[in-house]
Image 1 (cartoon, helix red, strand yellow):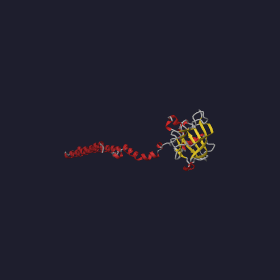
Image 2 (cartoon, helix red, strand yellow):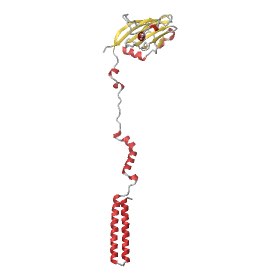
Image 3 (cartoon, one colour):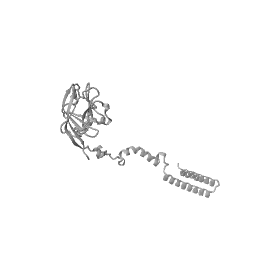
Image 4 (tube, one colour):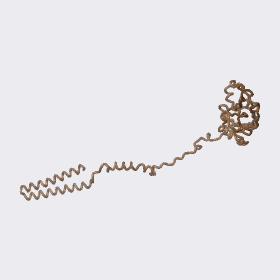
Length: 278
């Protein structure tokens, strides 16, 4: 009950008591005129106070309970409705996110394929056993000059330790024969093997470069007669594809394999490409 209602109720009780007391006093003194005047005045006071109480009572309405508080009810209602509203309200529906294709976000210079121009075509090349088992190698440098005007493409190296660091870095492959015959790839170079059916005349520089990167011979390939090198794809008609530290692409297509004291001598035709100037 509010404070205003309590005050009016007390006033009503006081008026009622005052009416009763006035009537008793008038009756006790045997004054009929005063008795009726006190009675009417008291009743009028009681009725007036009663009317005021009734009016205020119905205007204010029942006192709200804590759970009926508008702010509290609204907060509770919003809490109970929040998950559903977030799922269904158009204002909270996320716009679909469109992720661009990987190629769309890459710079054009990264996406573009290098352009090559033909340098040499079908130049005869051969690798043979170095003929000793004492640290001798036949080395291949595809950046060499096949016509003898510069460092050769192939040469025999007896002492590996005698080579300078730049000479070692220029070597793409080396051939070693001792108990077995092994063709190895030098660090910094990339060499792959295109099988006979894949190594057609129309193989491009880009295809050969991809083969060098994606079809590596695994660091070394054993090619002696007892190693079943043909199963690995090393046979006449197949091609070794190399990509050199200088950016040159080389395709050495096997044209003949013969055996010297059990170790193979391999003949190739060499085609090379270099980057086209921009």
